[in-house]
View (cartoon, helix red, strand yellow):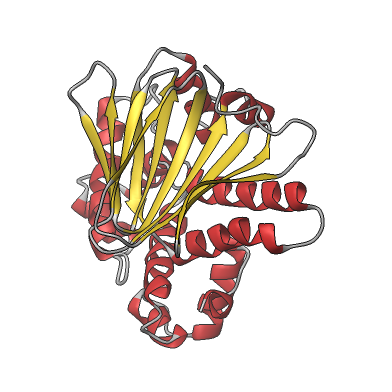
Length: 304
């Protein structure tokens, strides 16, 4: 029985076709001894199942552009599913499971597997950091556990294309691909919301009440005094508590919600950049573009 990782020997970038029939394919790419991704494109109306003998502790990020898949764990009746336009993050600790790819018409899936020893390079010794949280999760004896699920966005698609397109470049495959993978990890891990266990119930209730309201009203958000009134507290306590729970200011959180929504709208490529900006609450396209670049390191026009 072999490990999923340590499969490339002296070659630092290895592509292995697992299934090919016409335009359909399932390709495995080993970037280094800690990162493996699968590029899956299927068109026929049939399912494909793979038994995975997992000897490793790893984090798995799955991106479903079309189709879907399910994960069934050995010895468990629980089934985890991933559907179109979803990005899911799973943790697994040496648990055998079956991956069933569903291809009703067309299936386009990207699966990134990251070994615990790769994550270990970037630990901060702060358990409230996403990488530390994920690393700690897979050090326990767990099966396959979903820890985050969010919609697919334009930046994720852009970064996945960079990862996959590395194979067509002539030089420095491994280091270029690993750099793109780290960009992708930073983006997806930063979207995981972790709450410090030391926060008391009153503080958590105030912060969550504010968050719930902002989630529904970030395009035209209330003022701080208005939000404090909604949350039945004063301005000072609201600002202090919100920052303690979510590690950001209310203003920065509103900007985060707006840009995440813009990121989703850009994926569909229906609205112009100006229309996307106005849709999320920005009247000036230039200002919106600068904020987007400051957050994601790329301008909206480059994603379009």
